[in-house]
Amino acid sequence: MKSLPVIFSISWNACIKCGVCVAICPQDAGFISDFDTIAVQTPCDIACMICEEICPVTAITHEIIGTNGLMRVDEG
Amino acid sequence: MEYFDITIIGSGPAGATTARFAAQHGLKVLLLDKRQELGAPVQCSGAVSRHALLDNEVSISDEFIQEAIYGFSIFDTQGACSKIDYRDLKPDTYGPGPEQTPLGYVVDRRRFDRYLMTLAERAGTQVILKAEAKGYEREGADVIVKIKHFNEDVQVRTKIIVGADGLQSQVGKWAGLQTHLKFTELASCLQFVVDQVAADGLLEIVTGHQWAPGGYAWVFPKGHGYVEIGLGVICSMTEFNARWHLDHFLKRSFFKERFRDARILEVQGGGVPLSHPLRTQYADNMILVGDAARHVNPITGGGIHTALSSGKIAGEFLSGFIASGQVPNAQNLSTQQDLWMAALGRKMWELYEIKAQIFRMKNIEQRDEALFKTMAEYFSPNSPFKKI
Image 1 (tube, each protein chain N blue to C red):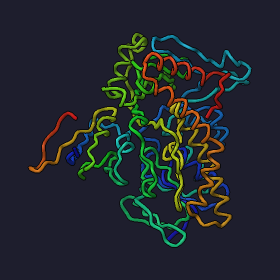
Image 2: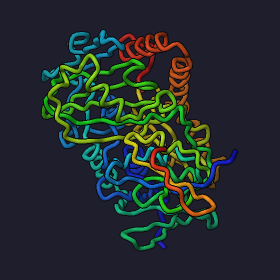
Image 3: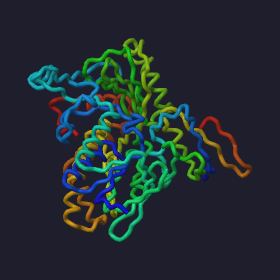
Image 4: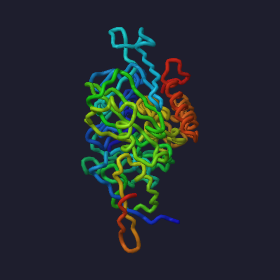
């Protein structure tokens, strides 16, 4: 089953700017934020979540973009 | 529009070294970096051998050295140690005395990267900081590089772009190269620089699935009496993140008494590709060097030596290439990869095969034993591996 698109959030308090999320991301060039993380305002339609899994400090969370707007997903 | 023979994106060890050798040979070189301070935030432990510096014509300077290194201690999962101290093994060569030298160093990447950039600049490279490359397009035989510099749009014309933009490389993706790393081959790393932990001029490497699944943990002297304690893990082999594992290593390992009074001074992290080098590291008007091309030692995770060496190879190759007047298409630029393969690449592929064989083992005890044995062998003076 195809995953629903998601929008990622980064906790800037936890993020150590290591860039691992960008390095592992299978998206095309440019799916990045201005702070060297994966994009935070653009929907991700791959939604493989490996960026969340590989983050050394668990700084990444996501919201699923459902048909009725956003659904909050706090833990992975 | 200003023209440069080559435009290098990213001023880390690979980019700055490419720039230095190309400029030394008379090329017109532009070196860009989007950061305001090179090397920061630190994503690296900073260990590098002395011969890696000297072979690549980087003179040893107090400006960037934090600590001299004389050997290794490799620990198995229970804490049994294989000590490889070159002060004892080869006292005629290695030691702190006036007639002796260190085996290697731990460097401050902020100072080291700035030093390498300075060497490039003194060789004639034009360097621009706070300059982010946003893309490029073909124009005739050249390309136009789009740059954002202090929020202003700038364009330059260039013959060849060198992607030295690190682990998160976008340049390779722009050219449509297969740069994607496997989830099972990107180590997620975290380290603390700490006070109140003793060390003795050795790089300490702790193996064992219980401490660092898919990678290893380390304790490196960091100068001024500090050490750095860190580890890298492969996330497909654990349900926890690197931070959990580092905390576990600090509080639960056979070093817990030694680490009891550790005070954290800095928090640093990064990704280390434990993959094979990219199969294709060139495209029309473009080559990749350093982390961007996955030029990392897959056994040690070390990337400074490989970055410096690939920068030297690229800088010298590009000098000859530009002078020859060849069309900078992918086919002609593939020679760069051939030269790199002969000098470094083949060895890196061999190391990758060894590493892959270890981590294919399903039995954890066997895997732990194989990793410990390989690490101890790798750093021994009788090692069958030529150091890269």
